[in-house]
Image (tube, rainbow, N blue to C red):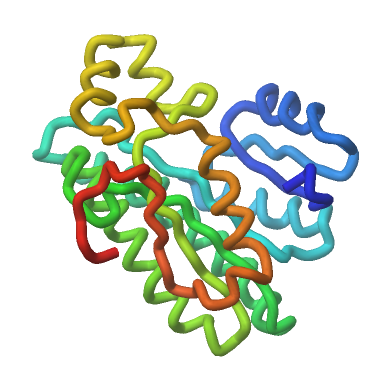
Length: 230
């Protein structure tokens, strides 16, 4: 987005990594990095307030937050399932609640949620499948409600892919045999996807060309998925 001329307010857990990311853009002074743990409501409000003050307004919201936290036991505790919902759904919904009213007033805006192949089929842990399915339902429902206001709410459902420090990279480093088995048994083209293959779809959904996509969750999994309906 920065390379395409956008100004960015970005949040994540580590300030140093965020600042490094911004330094690699063409105009670092056009962007702001705000480190936060967005599982806490007060941090969400602080991030949005600082972001709006810096940018002056928001045209696109891109939600890439989420994860399964390694909760492999199918019998989840209250605290575990609450945390999964906070990170995968609640934080994004609260950011939307704070930003959408101005978008509605302007009759323009785009919201993109990054879900997972697990949003439509049970390929992960119980907790991960549950919250990703909830996210897809949220996108579908909110997209329908916002369409008449000129707001495009979409989602993407990636299969396995590698990006700096993400789950697949960690798996490769921690257990290369399982990683290789995943590629051999799960991925039809027999190679792991990379994040640069996903970015063009996000850019499409963020552009005017995505005008009919509100409420849609678009799979991008190189044939990994087996669900007929998305």
